[in-house]
Length: 136
Image 1 (cartoon, one colour):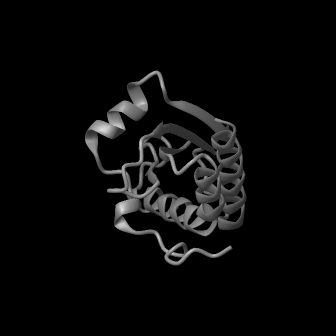
Image 2 (spheres, one colour; image 1 turned 60 degrees about the horizontal axis):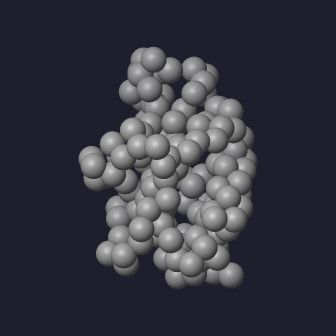
Image 3 (cartoon, one colour; image 1 turned 90 degrees about the vertical axis):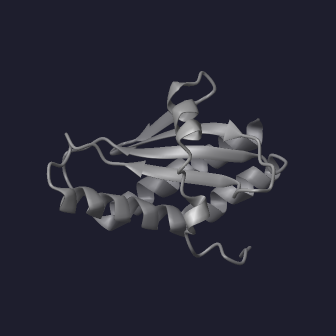
């Protein structure tokens, strides 16, 4: 199943709303799961049709990598991995009646990883999140 526009990561799919980010990290409704070196914090949200069903952000703490070049590389790797496997997440959201989700990927390790490994970890997280969203 291929949905048009699924092969890209548009600006609307990035989580930019300060209020939504604060709810994601400070509200009781948010959950998290980890697949080292990533931690996924997510929160189901109402999808009113004005924004995409899934919005994401990537955070790489400065304590992990002092150099911005390395932080930016990790963020690019995670965004690309998400772009490749977001179709499984959208399938889980459709099975849940078209609900939405806000999520944040947080890097935990202080070493750079190969892109194939990052891809597999993000795919693992997306599969687990889709299964949890189907059950709700």
